[in-house]
Image 1 (tube, rainbow, N blue to C red):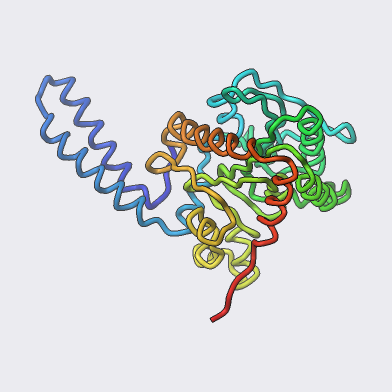
Image 2: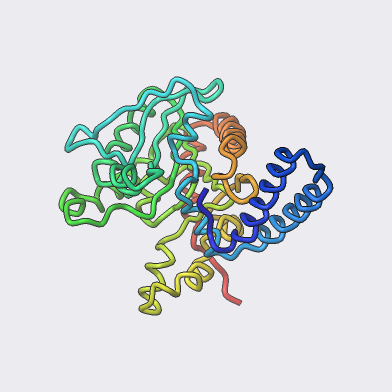
Length: 317
């Protein structure tokens, strides 16, 4: 498994424990006391490191190549997923997943950004950076959800919308703007979950809802730390400082009222235990869906509008 620099002491200790376990088994030597002491030390080390992560380190965890994707969560928490393709205008964007599924007793429509796990798949998925046809496919699914009165679940995991010339020629800004407008008017329950990276308008294009959840080590920001650093300091290497200033972590966003709930992750991040991460995610979605379902559609629209109007309000002292 890949790891970041700040995780190196943890990986070294885990490898040492594994070596002792293998040696003990192979040579029939009792090393249980030494192994137990090292495991205790490992637990303390993990707690110390993961409870004191900087904003930049959390961004790195959110970008881990083995982090669960939209398709991983669909596979783990839903049944009978039927994927739909294409926007009926240009083509099919593989950076956006969309379809029908069952979540416990709920029939739902699912949309979400999709990254790859290796270079080949990332190129195929365009690193989770959607084109206009991806957002139009998402809008098509929103309208189907409204037509059949099904709740909409939206998983956000993108560095941002694709900024290439072709995407701009095909109306990238308009596609995102239309989705934002569409989501404000949908009468159905909408739950948004930021599962990894929440980058700029690329995230907001499928990010308007009644409830915004975020995974513990995910981030949501108007710009990437590197982009912010390049603008403010003309140096992308200042990304760690930019990450602190942007207040993009789940904990910062909850304090600012941007998100409604933080979904706990396994120690070290969702990539270390897919099943536990998926279990926590499912529980949060189902609990909030039950609450939102009790509201009338008129109440949902009013509360959704007020939620976003309140964002950005601050007091000066």
